[in-house]
Amino acid sequence: MKLLTVISASLFAFIFLTTTNCAYSQITEKSAREWVNSKEWANGLSLNVAPSVDALEFYKQYHASKAVWDKVFQFLKDHNLDTLSVGKHPIDGDNAYASITYGPSKTLDEAKWESHRKYIDLQYVIKGEEKIEVAPVSAATVVTPYNEARDAANYTADGTYYIAKPGTFYLFFPRDAHRPNIKVDGYDDVKKLVIKIKVIQ
Image (cartoon, rainbow, N blue to C red):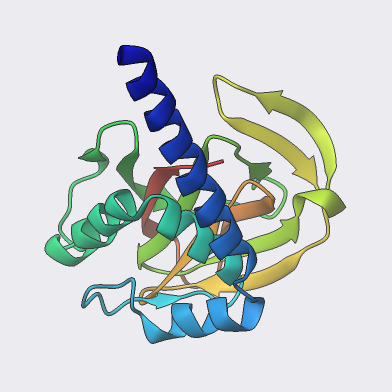
């Protein structure tokens, strides 16, 4: 009887995952972008999604771990980020957590390219402005191999620049190399939020 229960549970899990993956595979870039723009995910949150964000990957990751993402967006909605203290803030254990920093941005030479495998970066400038450069990992050259303890690899790359400012957040998935924290003239210090959200494979 126990064996039958285990087999049934395994079969259900297999069918669920297969069905879910099939559903994701039928989502197009256009429909994913429409979903992002609809703000169905936002639950009343007024922030915008940066144009650099991979809409299809956002759709897949959100629906693969909806409860966690909903907690992330609820955190953003419930807290006054202007007054939130520097340091770490829990959201959902190891699944999602936030860090607030405040300080000077970096020169172009000081800022480092990076990517992550275990966690997605949600980056949001609360006060000030900074440049973020973005490129596909596939087009970047590794200079420091992936370190599991740091959950990071470093690169050189030629990417596209964006000006990060209050009102718009960025998402960086494992295939997104990004170089944040680049100084914008006129903004000596920047208050910034980074939320780490566990990747669902």
